[in-house]
Image (cartoon, rainbow, N blue to C red; front, side, top):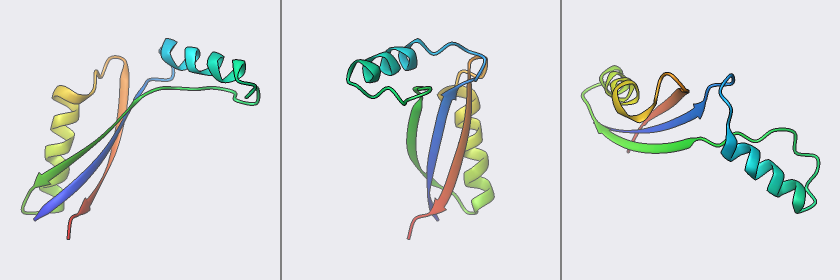
Length: 84
């Protein structure tokens, strides 16, 4: 079966996000002053061929842990859905 993984990777809350701060400042300069906080992360989609949902989930978990996320500075979550 084919599965589609939607992965979100974000800087951990305790880590400074200079890119997010720059965007927040830029939004303020555009007159959007009600924005409280901006955090910039990554959104990744990945198709996974696997026999079961559990196998697909394990594969995505390993991809996140070993390559996609820097676990010292980033956290991640993902959703998986079957592609029909």
